[in-house]
Structures are given as C-alpha cells and as structure tokens.
Length: 393
Image 1 (spheres, rainbow, N blue to C red):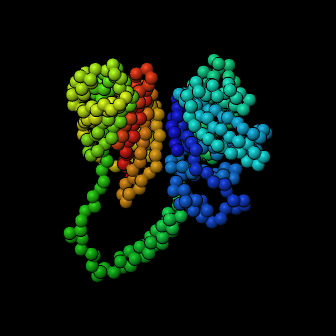
Image 2: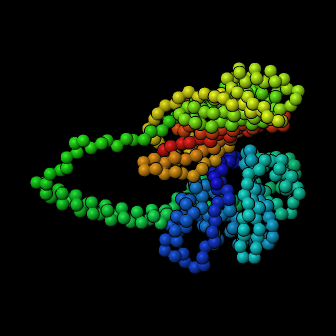
Image 3: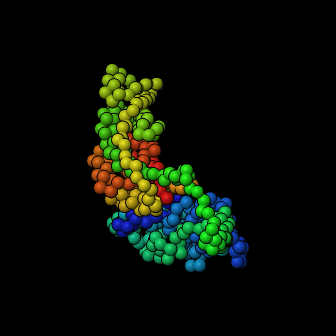
C-alpha cells in the first residue's frame, strides 16, 4: 500500500506492508522476477538482502532498507523504528534474528501515540532525524539520530519500487518484436510490388477514443453544502455520514446517529423535511436518507497519463492538508483506471472550500465514487474520507 507523507515540506510516497517473498540462494533463475510479478499481480518491485518486495504503485520501501540492517551491529530481538514526517510518523516493528531482519508491521501514527510508545519502550526505539515533528521530539527530550534512510523518490534509490514486467508481458514483448520484424519485411515487399492494390478502407468504423471527466472540483464543492445541511444534526447525536454514487451525478446519502428520549420527534422530522430527506427511528438510533448531495456536472476531456494525475493529486493533498493513498490499477484495452483516496482530519466548510478553490484553479481528472464523514465525541466533524475514480492512459 502506498501512502504519501510530507517530510520537510516534500511529499514522499512510502510503500507500507508490501507483499514480500524470500529469495532463493544463488543466482535467480531466468524470468524469476517476471514470474513473481505475475503471481503477486503487482507491477512494482525491489529486492534487498534476500527479500523481494511488491506493491501496486512506485514508492520508497523502508522495509527494503531495514532488512539490510543485518549487516550492522544491531542486537537481536525486538526493535521499533520511527521516521518523523511533518504531520504523521512512520513506525516499523521489526524482529532481528541472527541471519535476517523481519519487518513485522509498518504503519503511520500520530505524534501523541508515537510518544507514548517510545516512552513505554525506550531501549528498543530508534528515531530518524527528519521532518517537522523532529522538533516536537526535541521539546519532549527524545533523542533522534541519522539512521541513514534514503527517502529519494527515483530510480537511483535502490529501495525505490520500480516497474517490472509479468511473465505474460515478457512473452508479449518477445512476440511483438518478432511481429515488428515480420511487418517490416512484409512492408518492404509491399513497396516493391506497385501493382498490388491497397485494401479499401471505405466503411471501416472509426475507433472511439475514451474520455475522462474533470468533475472532482464540483464534487468537493458540493461537500460544503452537505456539511451546512447536516450541521444542525450534530446537536442530535449525529455519528457518521455515508455518500455513494448511484449513476451519473446521482448520489445516495445516509446519516446515522444516536437517539435519546429527550430529542423532540417533531423537531427531527421537521429538520428532515427541510433537507428533503426521510428519517426513521429504531431503538436507540436514527437514520436519515435522501438526495442531499448534488454536485454539478463536470467536463468531458481527453485522457492524460495516469502518472500525471497522481502527481497532481499529491500536490493537491500537500496544499490542502489532506492525506493521499493510491490503490491498484485496472487496465482496459485503451485506458487505465485507478482508485485514489483523500482524507482530511477535522474538516470544516472552510477547509473544504479551500480545497474546492484549489481544484477550480487546477481541475483534476476524476469523480467521486464514495465519501464518508465521521463525528468525534465532541459532536464535531472528525474525519472526511473521499474515494475517487480516475481514468487515464
């Protein structure tokens, strides 16, 4: 899984809990990597110290760097490794054996939880010196040091998961090379035969070029109106809100909350009518359903490289204070689709309005498929999670 974190004001794609295998001893058999890519169904890989790591997207593998610690004087046993970012902290739980290092778990943590873990287990904790949260550790008298991690996001970094080819792609590439040779010979023969008639192309159907849509700007803008419509329900035990696309720009919205006997039923039904929704009450909970989320149409536009969209979403997340993750690719005959998740802590109409303004300045490809809003114990918006479908080539 790829998570984008900000470290010293720079977005870094980290591969967390990548699928891994143990490599056989000696020289790898022919097509070994291609076969493993086919097996894992993940295109990107790197290898280090007897392990191979696979993920759906390119990113820096800290695990690939940690397994090489077996070549240092690190003591056997349990260790906790932390890499501070600007907003979150990378944590790896590792077990060091005599002949290898096993990375048991990777995760992103908030500062307070990280500090608690370090203080409860200081002897097995090591903190890399980087990120703006490094200053927070200094304020709590927690020592950091340079652990020599390479966080560069390019192919010069050995721990960067790079694109590989599956066994089928290798076979197809070989076949394509033979096919090009045959085509070249055939074309040469064609040119040497002027009497030969070229085929009649009259009536051949034109290939339809797939399009994408830049609707995410209007999707995010509509969230501001939704928060405004549902804000009054925070006083009546609202707990979560779910948005799901049904067809086109049509979305279904459900909002649930805790019901107390002190809540006036007439007031709840009145609020539901005002937002053109239906409310039902069952036991200690209530459920609101309706077409409360109404984004306007976006624009159809030619496809762009999917990698370009990924970079644009990374920039948006950094500017809007959001967290980004990218899911697996779905390949079609002439297009590629991917899922992108944006999340925001403690959203408000103001922060969402800011994100919508950024999107109007630079419209991005994609459209909202699902969204979820959760509410904290203090009856305030706690987290917003947006699932976005992006199509490119």
